[in-house]
Length: 210
Image 1 (cartoon, rainbow, N blue to C red):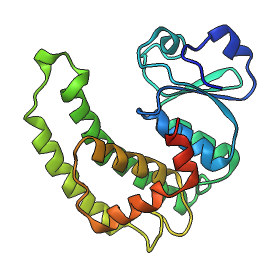
Image 2 (cartoon, rainbow, N blue to C red):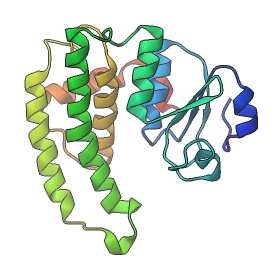
Image 3 (cartoon, one colour):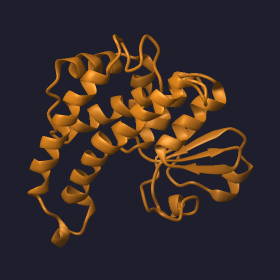
Image 4 (tube, helix red, strand yellow):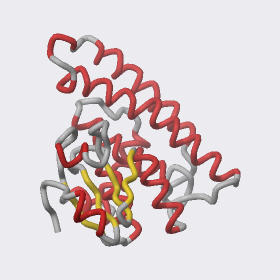
């Protein structure tokens, strides 16, 4: 079921998962994670800062996950929560594998997500008089440099940490799709091949079809 405006009264009583936010936002990460987990959910593609979103997140940012009436914000926190809760796509907390996983996730947020978000801010988010179009060239240069660093951190694959998909793969896959849409070139062959692998996943395709 897909509706446009979240109803706080109804969602407070709803049992199960509800994802708030359009698929062309970081909400895609949450939708994709739930598809990978095979969990059912309701999707409400409400826009950032809309009345229905602010009711659950005063900052107006998406995504928001409603789990049994409780809102959870921030895409990375949400997907790690879901992975931990269902015991899939993650290493257990307190293990060296989890430390490496969290390190990769943080690297992707600092070097990939941050550059793409800054470019978006200076393209259409900030008021026009505050936008600096020249910053995008610098961001693309930094993004390309980060690609080279990431390739050196890849396992033998096919995923970032080996044969099994983990939370940072959700972040990276989404960032690479976002990069192409924002005209940030993916210059490393390893990442281009990886993106082909990600796009072929049925769970990814189901999430993006929303």
